[in-house]
Length: 246
Image (spheres, helix red, strand yellow):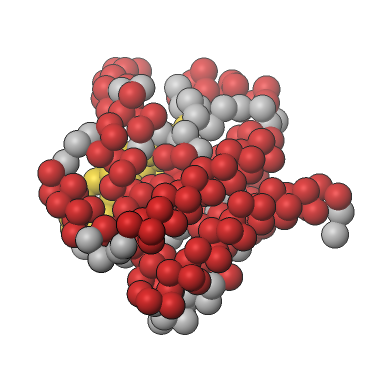
């Protein structure tokens, strides 16, 4: 393994070792899979309600935290801080799917009937294939289309989207302003995982809890940067301008 790979692994494992220990400790009373699922729901609702308050989600949040003691909630708060710090460190090397890695490290895929997420190196390779080959061609495309529209019909923990974001960073484009994501998953746990990571990496995105095949949609989760930078309006204006140009 080369030095760059060692550095990436060190970044990812730093704070997340503590994160995993907290999940395992809390899991002795609640079960590991429940703690992980509850953590993702609590974190997602906290982020979402910070920009778009929603009483129904707030009620879900209050129901979840009632099951934990004050000491346990302090651990969950520490877990969130660990995740924020780990993603912040990782962002300098390129976005990576840290929650998906934890999901597999804790062997939670066994609980969820063999649910496996695409390995990060494959996602990065797909991102590199999909992305423009260099900064010059990337900026030329941006002049023509305004931004890269990324659609992910089965987002899982968000690894494929993060692979594309990583590829943009590699050619010196800004994934926080040069791309916008619509991602869908039928599994609410996956919606929460993807939403947390896309939010904390600062990626404009709408994560949809829905069924891509039947087109049913049950909820929408807007990342903070999507809301703050008025991406709904930007997309509508872009669509109008694109239609006129066509």
